Amino acid sequence: MSQASTISDVTVVDDPFYVDKVSPRASTYLAYFFLIGLIAAILYIIIRSVIFRRVELPSDITEKFSDITFLGVVPFVDDGADDTLSKNTLKTFASNVLLSLGDEKLILVTGAIKGVGKSFVAKQLAETLSNVNDKSVLLIDADFYKGKLHEEFNVKRVKAEDYIPTILNPLKIQNASKLYFAPKPTNASDLSYSLLDSQAFRSAINQVLNNYDFVIIDSSPVMQTTEASLLSTMCPVTINVASLRSTPWKDFCESHMRLTSISNSKQLFAINRFKKIRSYYEIGRAHV
Image 1 (tube, rainbow, N blue to C red):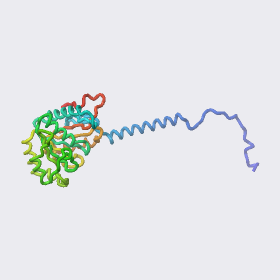
Image 2 (tube, one colour):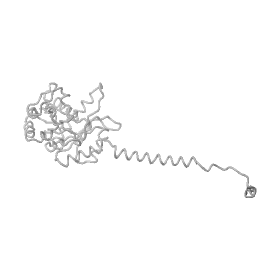
Image 3 (tube, rainbow, N blue to C red):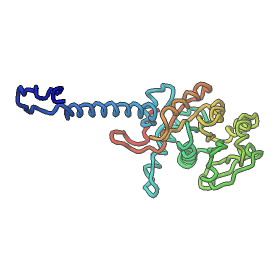
Image 4 (spheres, one colour):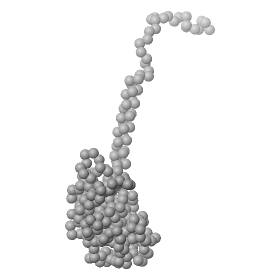
């Protein structure tokens, strides 16, 4: 074994010395981590802006669609807060609606998806037109699925067969001088399309237009039902409601394109639950 070994033939040429560690190098790994973090941040921004984008400002909508008019905003007000600003904003909103309508009297209020506050906007608009602008208004609840306006007015729903007669002879709201209301029928979601598409419903709408200054119809959401699209073909004016930082951008765009593809209705939109942000000029001021 000693004869086969070469250890005895090893000769030290130079003494060992230390220069620097070869690996890992902190600067190299720091650059790697910075690059990975930068790429991850860029991907997050792209995914958030494309997939999870929400309606932020009215200008986002008006810049994309030239055929839609901004009515105004309905402000977000905390419970117990002073509602003076809210009342003034609603007056401005109602005035913008009047300026946009021209000679039209029939208004459809809808939204892309549920939860945007379309029924709230319809109710506030009807009450403001009635109480502040001294207009006779008929508010019709045509959301047979999730409509809750009857709870807001503390009235009972009607039977399906009494829905159209109730439109012709609606309930008078006690706290409003010229506001009338037709609640949705009970357990009639499976009859909603056929009922709203009936000649009797169309005739009733044409008849009540002669009795009131304005008729406002609160419909179900555009993206989740077909009734909103149907009603938009009957109504000359459609208000598409979006909730600030809540309504998905793609859903609002799709709802607008769906409405314009099947109807010649004048397209308006409003932003609900609006909070004033820095550099935004005066809540409720709209350009019509």
